[in-house]
Amino acid sequence: MRPLEQMPHARVATVFTDIDDTLTTGGKLSAEAYEALEALQQAGLRVIPVTGRPAGWCDQIARLWPVDGIIGENGALYMWHDTQTGKLQTRHLLDEASRAGNAARLAGVCERILREVPGCAVASDQFCRQYDLAIDFCEDVPPLPRDAVDRIVRIMEESGMTAKISSIHVNGWFGDYDKLSMARLMMRERYGVDLADEAERSRCVFAGDSPNDAPMFAYFPLSVGVANVLEFADRLAHAPHFITRQPCGAGFAELTRHLLARP
Image (cartoon, rainbow, N blue to C red):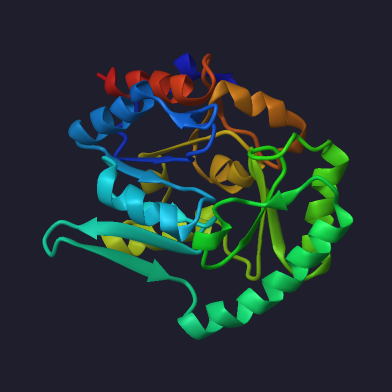
């Protein structure tokens, strides 16, 4: 990971960013981070959060934040607010029947995790999720040791799920999608941009902080970790290419200043 100052001033068109502990600091969205989002959009850049947070959160963010759309539940869906119709639009990977069928399977896995991993809890935002199971290991519960987090992951994987660790939750779902696969789909469907093209990838920046961001870190040449990504250094399948000096939302604001200072 090289210092952010060494990241070239490319002609960036799109900024993808994680939310928890990348935009937020201690669970709060600071004015500094929110203003950074707005500054990017006002400068003509496309701004798209890519998060493990649920569909219910994505609805609010797509409507109210200065963003062009949002990818939610670790790549299960994307939303955008259509300014021409004044309506929120959602692109799902699975139809309603498939989502309902998976919900029963998720409930069984959840019951096992709660029984076998003391101290964890169902994430408080689970009620507005449509695809995945989120198990809290430090947001609203006392932080669990690493072996307990790893146990949650193992149970999910033994149950045939994909499992990813964020800075606060372990998220599990049935399917092989992730943040990157949906980013590629969204860019192709919404903007006619093929991210398989190296030139197009070089016009995108991704900012993140945790293991579930690894596919995005690996794919984009201009991937950036806010400083707190170092807390997960030994868990990252792929590290970001650059790193900010500041953590969390202050690190994202640092990245924004770097991008907007481009010649």
